[in-house]
Length: 340
Image (cartoon, rainbow, N blue to C red; front, side):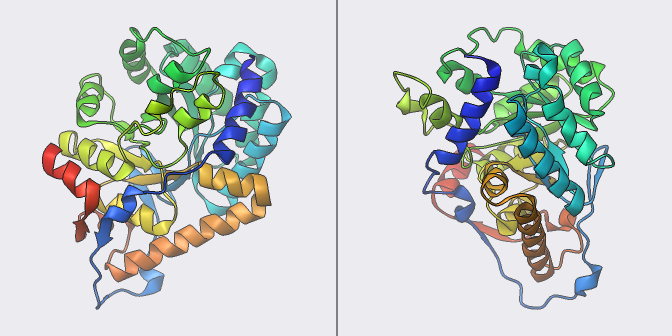
């Protein structure tokens, strides 16, 4: 199967597969504070994450590109929405465009639609430094995402099976690129042990991309004749992964994605120590079903929800949410008691 056809399959299955009934963000209860001391007009969403200066902690996480006109249309709409709302945006893996130049336009449309915005390039950990340099140049990107998707590859019928060079590749990209390199999962979370490995090779930006959102085990199983269904519950839920990474590598710039549904989930991620939070499948669904204007409305609603939470917790900025009072319940509490 061609990469282009696979990209379209991924979108179709990502939109159609059932979501987990349990979301571990529901295991986090924010402790209500009754007497705020701020004015609404004082609140600001400006965010710093290392070298990245952003107007919001929310970003559109990696989704698509490389699937012809359909993915070009989706990326154009998402980029226009990101431009209107002032948030960053990542593209899907650009390896398709590196192997087939005809697919470049499905990614470059993001920069064309948002010439002044913050754009993240994206490749898998099989990529070399040369690949990463070309991907950044393709988009005039402000940062580079390198995604870790071992389990997805193993379930994917045509996926990779040799992972011996992955850590070395990442190290070369981190040391050789002039822009920040964000290492991210694709829905299985980052453990504290993985965070230590990434720290040792110089990675400073980690997107935990935990379990709870788009489930690539389910997506790839829909493409198999003999589904590996036992792996559909594999992975570390996003809130837990944030706490694991922050415990082992507190100086990292930690991003949270995977199962973020609204501004309250985003606030919880920031309280746990994330610097930014990303959304992919939820915004993709809005884009495909209702169009760009609906995506703008959804992003504005998330911003409003986040600001209400900030007001209630006396936080002028997203950064000031970190460490606000919360209570853990359920399986998240059990996990943290055993691991941290």
